[in-house]
Length: 292
Image (cartoon, rainbow, N blue to C red; front, side, top):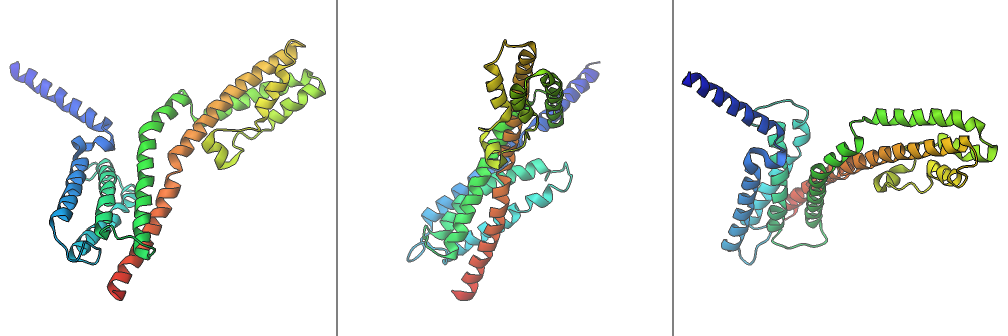
């Protein structure tokens, strides 16, 4: 009996660990394993830079600079393989979560490896261009970490268990009600309502989507105009109420689009910068081996 109880307790503990692992984010993967590895590597580079004497001074062309440069170049190439890894399914030691955690923390260590490789000798040349692009890739990656840590919760709260298609359908439902109710309005009162009905909720471009500001919102203008005529007729009262509900639904959809844009826009910067970095890194390596 005691043995059976012990087996059940062990199985419950094992199931609990499995659940914890499933809900564990890539930043905390395996007890911050890759944060510790990256931190140790960074400290090792900084300590070796201080302890190893290079004459006349540290620079990218010294044996020490070549060592850090080779390490950094190989690390950059490996980090770019995350996109390939995402296309494969695996739950082994190198799961996507493990790979992403390593990508993030080892990517941050590149700021030290690349800068210490240069010996802090920067100028207007292809070598500094490679360093600058590397730092931009790292900064854009840091932005990506921040938005993935903060925005999904806000995105979920704003949706209120609705999908984007459901939000659009809610807008269409209000439009249908507005169209029917506006039939009884005077032409001057119906005009702003018709403009609101023809409004494209996705209009405004990327700037409006990222800022969440739509200064020419036809629904807001119609609500402002007809709001001044509340009480003049029952139809006006109904239309004002429907416009208010539509504006609330439109605001939810636009907040959803804004959060989605903030969540995804960094990839349109991070990925092209990564390809530019690889090109500049190739030019840097070629110039070092063939022209120095």
